[in-house]
Length: 60
View (cartoon, rainbow, N blue to C red):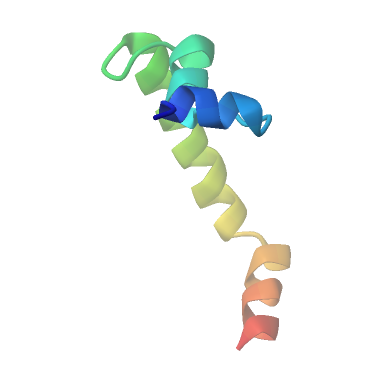
């Protein structure tokens, strides 16, 4: 039976948890927490833009 890692590799995919660990450190590290805070700030800021508000209205 193939492992998840083998299946992902065969299909040209990457495990997001492993990618995050490599790029931003393990969960709980200062690097990972800094990334999470920056991502949260970006998403929350984007949600307040007129472009985002207008796209939400179009979906309804």
